[in-house]
Amino acid sequence: TEANKAFLAKRVVHFDYDSSDLSNDDYQTLQAHAQFLMANANSRVALTGHTDERGTREYNMALGERRAKAVESFLITTGVSPNQLEAVSYGKEMPINAGHDENAWKENRRVEINYEAVPPLLK
Image 1 (tube, rainbow, N blue to C red):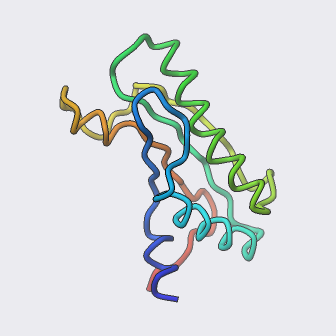
Image 2: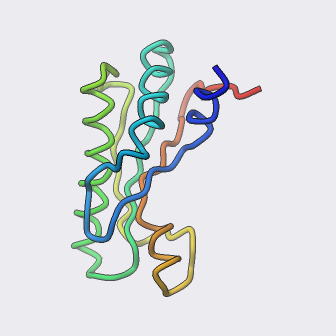
């Protein structure tokens, strides 16, 4: 469906400050990716956890990992095979917004869904 394509096109979920809880907004996105992955056993994704710049490197590596694992366990609980998933943390090392304010931090608190093999075609 068109709606499903829109959710599949979304490859990022965001988090509140210091949190690894998934938001209701993200469930539909993750549900769409879960359905795609279950239907396409050859597809694999790397789930990369990211944080904003506040806090120590060590703390943020752990927080990024909790975020990636939260997405991973949602997908596994939904029925995706664990061997299609890889959870990785980059902590605060790879911001997508280099700013130093709440707007930038909000964008940087994220997990990216990176297809390593056979991504959905959105034509």
